Length: 343
Image (cartoon, rainbow, N blue to C red; front, side):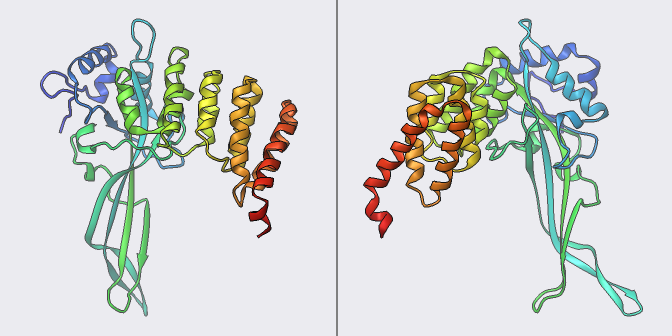
Protein backbone atom coordinates (compact mmCIF):
# COMPACT_ATOMS: atom_id res chain seq x y z
CA UNK A 1 0.00 0.00 0.00
CA UNK A 2 1.53 3.31 -1.07
CA UNK A 3 1.71 5.84 1.69
CA UNK A 4 1.34 9.60 1.46
CA UNK A 5 2.28 12.42 3.83
CA UNK A 6 -1.14 13.86 2.86
CA UNK A 7 -3.31 11.23 1.18
CA UNK A 8 -5.19 13.77 -0.96
CA UNK A 9 -2.42 16.08 -2.17
CA UNK A 10 1.07 14.77 -1.36
CA UNK A 11 2.44 11.58 -2.92
CA UNK A 12 5.60 9.95 -1.59
CA UNK A 13 7.74 8.97 -4.61
CA UNK A 14 9.17 5.52 -5.03
CA UNK A 15 12.78 4.99 -4.03
CA UNK A 16 13.76 4.64 -7.71
CA UNK A 17 12.13 7.95 -8.60
CA UNK A 18 13.77 9.59 -5.62
CA UNK A 19 17.26 8.90 -6.92
CA UNK A 20 16.47 9.35 -10.61
CA UNK A 21 14.71 12.69 -10.25
CA UNK A 22 16.23 14.60 -7.35
CA UNK A 23 14.27 17.70 -8.28
CA UNK A 24 11.09 16.11 -6.92
CA UNK A 25 12.57 16.07 -3.43
CA UNK A 26 12.07 19.81 -3.02
CA UNK A 27 8.50 19.45 -4.28
CA UNK A 28 7.87 16.63 -1.82
CA UNK A 29 9.25 18.75 1.01
CA UNK A 30 7.10 21.76 0.11
CA UNK A 31 3.93 19.67 -0.12
CA UNK A 32 4.68 17.84 3.10
CA UNK A 33 5.28 21.01 5.10
CA UNK A 34 2.27 22.76 3.59
CA UNK A 35 -0.33 20.02 3.93
CA UNK A 36 0.75 17.83 6.81
CA UNK A 37 -0.75 19.32 9.95
CA UNK A 38 -1.21 16.34 12.26
CA UNK A 39 1.69 14.87 14.21
CA UNK A 40 0.66 11.22 14.32
CA UNK A 41 2.26 10.34 10.97
CA UNK A 42 5.00 12.94 10.65
CA UNK A 43 7.52 10.20 9.80
CA UNK A 44 7.83 8.45 6.42
CA UNK A 45 10.27 5.85 5.16
CA UNK A 46 11.55 3.27 2.70
CA UNK A 47 12.50 -0.36 3.26
CA UNK A 48 16.17 -1.05 2.50
CA UNK A 49 17.04 -3.68 -0.11
CA UNK A 50 20.15 -5.23 1.43
CA UNK A 51 20.41 -7.24 4.65
CA UNK A 52 21.61 -5.41 7.75
CA UNK A 53 21.96 -6.36 11.40
CA UNK A 54 22.34 -4.47 14.66
CA UNK A 55 26.11 -4.58 14.31
CA UNK A 56 26.35 -3.06 10.82
CA UNK A 57 23.26 -0.90 10.28
CA UNK A 58 25.05 2.43 9.89
CA UNK A 59 24.98 5.19 7.27
CA UNK A 60 28.56 4.41 6.30
CA UNK A 61 27.73 0.74 5.68
CA UNK A 62 24.80 1.18 3.29
CA UNK A 63 25.10 -0.53 -0.08
CA UNK A 64 23.91 0.02 -3.65
CA UNK A 65 20.54 1.66 -4.04
CA UNK A 66 20.16 1.94 -0.27
CA UNK A 67 23.09 4.36 -0.18
CA UNK A 68 21.72 6.30 -3.18
CA UNK A 69 18.31 6.76 -1.54
CA UNK A 70 19.74 7.86 1.81
CA UNK A 71 22.35 10.12 0.21
CA UNK A 72 19.62 11.82 -1.83
CA UNK A 73 17.60 12.53 1.30
CA UNK A 74 20.58 13.65 3.37
CA UNK A 75 21.99 15.94 0.68
CA UNK A 76 18.69 17.69 -0.16
CA UNK A 77 19.12 21.37 0.75
CA UNK A 78 16.96 24.47 0.83
CA UNK A 79 17.77 27.61 -1.16
CA UNK A 80 19.63 28.79 1.94
CA UNK A 81 21.76 25.66 1.96
CA UNK A 82 20.06 24.05 4.98
CA UNK A 83 19.11 20.34 5.06
CA UNK A 84 15.47 19.72 4.15
CA UNK A 85 15.08 16.45 6.04
CA UNK A 86 16.15 14.72 9.22
CA UNK A 87 17.17 11.17 8.32
CA UNK A 88 17.47 8.12 10.60
CA UNK A 89 17.93 4.39 10.08
CA UNK A 90 15.89 1.75 11.84
CA UNK A 91 15.99 -2.01 12.18
CA UNK A 92 12.66 -3.80 11.98
CA UNK A 93 12.27 -7.00 13.98
CA UNK A 94 9.77 -9.78 13.35
CA UNK A 95 9.28 -12.23 16.21
CA UNK A 96 7.45 -15.55 16.00
CA UNK A 97 6.95 -18.31 18.53
CA UNK A 98 5.09 -21.57 18.27
CA UNK A 99 5.19 -25.34 18.34
CA UNK A 100 8.12 -27.12 16.75
CA UNK A 101 8.26 -30.17 14.58
CA UNK A 102 10.00 -33.14 16.14
CA UNK A 103 11.91 -35.02 13.47
CA UNK A 104 13.17 -38.58 13.49
CA UNK A 105 16.48 -38.73 11.65
CA UNK A 106 16.72 -42.53 11.86
CA UNK A 107 19.24 -44.75 13.60
CA UNK A 108 17.88 -43.64 16.98
CA UNK A 109 18.55 -39.98 16.28
CA UNK A 110 15.90 -37.26 16.54
CA UNK A 111 15.62 -33.55 17.18
CA UNK A 112 13.65 -30.37 16.80
CA UNK A 113 13.00 -29.30 13.23
CA UNK A 114 11.22 -26.21 11.91
CA UNK A 115 8.18 -24.33 13.21
CA UNK A 116 5.05 -26.40 12.92
CA UNK A 117 2.48 -23.80 13.97
CA UNK A 118 2.83 -20.10 14.84
CA UNK A 119 1.20 -19.20 18.14
CA UNK A 120 2.44 -15.64 18.53
CA UNK A 121 3.83 -13.08 16.08
CA UNK A 122 4.76 -9.40 16.33
CA UNK A 123 6.68 -6.76 14.38
CA UNK A 124 8.47 -3.88 16.04
CA UNK A 125 11.43 -1.53 15.74
CA UNK A 126 14.41 -2.91 17.62
CA UNK A 127 17.03 -0.27 16.80
CA UNK A 128 17.27 3.37 15.72
CA UNK A 129 20.42 4.99 14.30
CA UNK A 130 20.49 8.77 14.66
CA UNK A 131 21.74 11.45 12.27
CA UNK A 132 25.19 11.21 13.86
CA UNK A 133 25.38 7.52 12.80
CA UNK A 134 25.20 6.26 16.40
CA UNK A 135 22.66 4.03 18.09
CA UNK A 136 20.07 5.97 20.05
CA UNK A 137 19.24 4.58 23.48
CA UNK A 138 15.75 4.84 24.89
CA UNK A 139 14.38 6.22 21.63
CA UNK A 140 10.82 7.19 22.46
CA UNK A 141 9.26 7.81 19.04
CA UNK A 142 6.47 5.36 18.29
CA UNK A 143 5.59 4.96 14.62
CA UNK A 144 2.95 2.94 12.78
CA UNK A 145 5.05 0.89 10.39
CA UNK A 146 2.12 0.10 8.12
CA UNK A 147 1.44 3.80 7.70
CA UNK A 148 5.01 5.08 7.54
CA UNK A 149 6.83 2.73 5.18
CA UNK A 150 6.33 2.85 1.41
CA UNK A 151 6.01 -0.79 0.37
CA UNK A 152 3.69 -2.95 -1.71
CA UNK A 153 4.08 -5.80 0.77
CA UNK A 154 2.56 -6.27 4.18
CA UNK A 155 5.08 -5.49 6.91
CA UNK A 156 5.16 -9.10 8.11
CA UNK A 157 6.08 -10.28 4.59
CA UNK A 158 9.25 -8.16 4.32
CA UNK A 159 11.52 -10.49 6.26
CA UNK A 160 11.93 -13.60 4.14
CA UNK A 161 11.57 -17.15 5.38
CA UNK A 162 14.94 -17.86 7.01
CA UNK A 163 15.25 -16.54 10.59
CA UNK A 164 18.42 -14.74 11.63
CA UNK A 165 18.11 -16.07 15.17
CA UNK A 166 16.41 -19.21 16.50
CA UNK A 167 15.89 -20.66 19.96
CA UNK A 168 14.28 -24.00 20.78
CA UNK A 169 13.11 -25.89 23.84
CA UNK A 170 12.47 -29.62 23.94
CA UNK A 171 9.68 -31.62 25.52
CA UNK A 172 8.60 -30.62 29.02
CA UNK A 173 6.26 -32.37 31.40
CA UNK A 174 3.22 -30.56 30.09
CA UNK A 175 4.07 -29.47 26.56
CA UNK A 176 5.81 -30.44 23.39
CA UNK A 177 8.84 -28.75 21.85
CA UNK A 178 8.66 -25.02 21.14
CA UNK A 179 10.60 -22.72 18.85
CA UNK A 180 11.21 -18.96 18.56
CA UNK A 181 12.31 -17.04 15.45
CA UNK A 182 13.71 -13.54 14.96
CA UNK A 183 14.05 -11.88 11.53
CA UNK A 184 15.33 -8.39 10.71
CA UNK A 185 14.99 -5.81 7.94
CA UNK A 186 16.54 -2.36 7.64
CA UNK A 187 14.67 0.83 6.73
CA UNK A 188 15.27 4.56 6.45
CA UNK A 189 12.92 7.04 8.14
CA UNK A 190 12.81 10.77 7.47
CA UNK A 191 10.74 13.88 8.04
CA UNK A 192 11.00 17.60 7.21
CA UNK A 193 13.47 19.47 9.36
CA UNK A 194 10.73 22.05 9.88
CA UNK A 195 8.80 19.40 11.85
CA UNK A 196 11.77 18.24 13.90
CA UNK A 197 10.64 20.05 17.04
CA UNK A 198 7.43 18.02 17.11
CA UNK A 199 9.33 14.78 16.56
CA UNK A 200 11.97 15.70 19.16
CA UNK A 201 9.47 16.20 21.94
CA UNK A 202 8.21 12.65 21.38
CA UNK A 203 11.53 10.96 20.62
CA UNK A 204 13.37 12.04 23.77
CA UNK A 205 16.88 12.90 24.89
CA UNK A 206 18.96 10.45 22.86
CA UNK A 207 17.46 11.72 19.62
CA UNK A 208 18.02 15.40 20.39
CA UNK A 209 21.63 14.58 21.35
CA UNK A 210 22.09 12.78 18.03
CA UNK A 211 20.73 15.81 16.15
CA UNK A 212 23.01 18.14 18.12
CA UNK A 213 26.07 16.04 17.30
CA UNK A 214 25.40 16.33 13.56
CA UNK A 215 23.79 19.80 13.45
CA UNK A 216 24.72 22.74 11.28
CA UNK A 217 26.11 25.66 13.33
CA UNK A 218 22.89 27.64 12.96
CA UNK A 219 20.87 24.87 14.67
CA UNK A 220 23.22 24.21 17.60
CA UNK A 221 21.76 26.77 20.10
CA UNK A 222 18.19 25.52 19.68
CA UNK A 223 19.13 21.85 19.95
CA UNK A 224 21.42 22.46 22.93
CA UNK A 225 18.57 24.24 24.68
CA UNK A 226 16.36 21.23 23.93
CA UNK A 227 18.90 18.84 25.48
CA UNK A 228 19.06 20.89 28.68
CA UNK A 229 15.27 21.20 28.87
CA UNK A 230 14.91 17.41 28.68
CA UNK A 231 17.56 16.95 31.37
CA UNK A 232 15.69 19.37 33.61
CA UNK A 233 12.41 17.58 33.03
CA UNK A 234 14.03 14.26 33.94
CA UNK A 235 12.71 12.77 30.72
CA UNK A 236 15.97 11.00 30.01
CA UNK A 237 18.80 9.41 31.91
CA UNK A 238 21.79 11.74 32.26
CA UNK A 239 23.92 10.14 29.59
CA UNK A 240 27.52 11.39 29.43
CA UNK A 241 26.96 11.75 25.68
CA UNK A 242 24.48 14.56 26.41
CA UNK A 243 27.14 16.64 28.14
CA UNK A 244 29.66 15.84 25.42
CA UNK A 245 27.22 17.10 22.81
CA UNK A 246 26.50 20.27 24.81
CA UNK A 247 30.12 21.30 24.45
CA UNK A 248 29.34 22.10 20.80
CA UNK A 249 27.24 25.03 22.02
CA UNK A 250 30.02 26.48 24.17
CA UNK A 251 27.35 28.08 26.38
CA UNK A 252 28.26 28.18 30.08
CA UNK A 253 24.69 29.14 31.08
CA UNK A 254 23.25 26.03 29.41
CA UNK A 255 26.04 23.90 30.85
CA UNK A 256 25.31 25.21 34.37
CA UNK A 257 21.62 24.36 33.94
CA UNK A 258 22.63 20.86 32.84
CA UNK A 259 24.89 20.40 35.88
CA UNK A 260 22.09 21.52 38.20
CA UNK A 261 19.86 18.84 36.69
CA UNK A 262 22.36 16.16 37.78
CA UNK A 263 21.28 15.04 41.23
CA UNK A 264 24.38 12.90 41.63
CA UNK A 265 27.29 11.73 39.50
CA UNK A 266 26.41 8.15 38.73
CA UNK A 267 29.54 6.89 37.00
CA UNK A 268 33.10 7.72 36.03
CA UNK A 269 32.18 8.58 32.44
CA UNK A 270 29.79 11.29 33.58
CA UNK A 271 32.47 12.68 35.90
CA UNK A 272 34.91 12.78 32.99
CA UNK A 273 32.51 14.77 30.79
CA UNK A 274 31.74 17.20 33.61
CA UNK A 275 35.40 17.96 34.20
CA UNK A 276 35.93 18.39 30.45
CA UNK A 277 33.17 21.01 30.39
CA UNK A 278 34.62 22.77 33.44
CA UNK A 279 38.02 22.90 31.79
CA UNK A 280 36.65 24.20 28.48
CA UNK A 281 34.19 26.80 29.77
CA UNK A 282 35.95 28.11 32.91
CA UNK A 283 32.82 29.50 34.56
CA UNK A 284 32.35 30.05 38.31
CA UNK A 285 28.62 29.22 38.33
CA UNK A 286 29.29 26.05 36.37
CA UNK A 287 31.97 25.04 38.87
CA UNK A 288 29.64 25.70 41.79
CA UNK A 289 26.96 23.50 40.23
CA UNK A 290 29.53 20.74 39.75
CA UNK A 291 30.59 20.91 43.40
CA UNK A 292 26.95 20.67 44.50
CA UNK A 293 26.51 17.52 42.42
CA UNK A 294 29.76 16.17 43.86
CA UNK A 295 28.60 16.77 47.42
CA UNK A 296 25.34 14.93 46.67
CA UNK A 297 27.35 12.08 45.21
CA UNK A 298 29.37 11.73 48.41
CA UNK A 299 26.16 11.01 50.29
CA UNK A 300 25.67 7.79 48.33
CA UNK A 301 27.07 4.53 49.62
CA UNK A 302 28.79 3.94 46.30
CA UNK A 303 29.74 7.58 45.78
CA UNK A 304 33.14 7.79 47.46
CA UNK A 305 35.00 6.14 44.57
CA UNK A 306 33.33 8.52 42.09
CA UNK A 307 34.29 11.49 44.27
CA UNK A 308 37.91 10.33 44.36
CA UNK A 309 37.89 9.89 40.59
CA UNK A 310 36.42 13.37 40.14
CA UNK A 311 39.06 15.00 42.37
CA UNK A 312 41.81 13.22 40.47
CA UNK A 313 40.40 14.43 37.15
CA UNK A 314 40.30 17.99 38.44
CA UNK A 315 43.94 17.81 39.44
CA UNK A 316 44.99 16.39 36.07
CA UNK A 317 42.86 18.67 33.91
CA UNK A 318 44.31 22.06 34.78
CA UNK A 319 41.45 23.12 37.06
CA UNK A 320 43.18 21.87 40.18
CA UNK A 321 42.33 25.16 41.90
CA UNK A 322 38.88 23.66 42.49
CA UNK A 323 40.24 20.64 44.35
CA UNK A 324 40.36 22.37 47.76
CA UNK A 325 36.77 23.60 47.34
CA UNK A 326 35.65 20.11 46.33
CA UNK A 327 37.39 18.58 49.32
CA UNK A 328 35.82 21.15 51.65
CA UNK A 329 32.39 20.28 50.29
CA UNK A 330 32.99 16.60 51.03
CA UNK A 331 34.30 17.38 54.52
CA UNK A 332 31.21 19.49 55.26
CA UNK A 333 29.01 16.61 54.20
CA UNK A 334 31.03 14.14 56.32
CA UNK A 335 30.77 16.33 59.43
CA UNK A 336 27.01 16.73 59.05
CA UNK A 337 26.60 12.99 58.52
CA UNK A 338 29.26 11.76 60.92
CA UNK A 339 26.71 10.06 63.15
CA UNK A 340 25.28 8.08 60.25
CA UNK A 341 28.76 7.14 59.06
CA UNK A 342 29.70 5.73 62.49
CA UNK A 343 26.49 3.75 62.92
